[in-house]
Amino acid sequence: MNIHKKSHNLYTYYPSCFKKKFVFCCKIGAMGFWDFIFGAKKRQVTLFLENGATILDVRSKTEYDAGAVPKSIHIPLQELHNNIAKLKAMNTPFVVCCASGVRSAKATKFLNLNNIQATNGGGWMKLSETYNLID
Image (cartoon, rainbow, N blue to C red):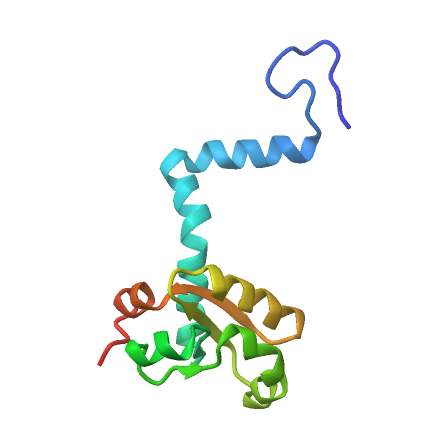
């Protein structure tokens, strides 16, 4: 840790890696910072969709039957572990969705741990509207 004994500014008791991050955050500004943090998900979903990702819906069958993203595949979260081989065989990245984003976050983490490229698309309705996926 770099501690400057004579200096009494903001950086005095912080390691040099913090200084770089702090300066970066100050440069992009408050609104830019929040866009940087929260816009990352949108940029990643966009990148996946542009590269031909398949949309994977992990809601229950009842929820899926009530409405879903067209051309999405449906595997409920509790059945995901039984379908790993099937998903790997598809050899495609996945944008995972559910009703609100909680189950899709769990599914995304599970898929990534099993060496399947996936990103959390959040709720299916917002995903459909944001990326104009409804026919």
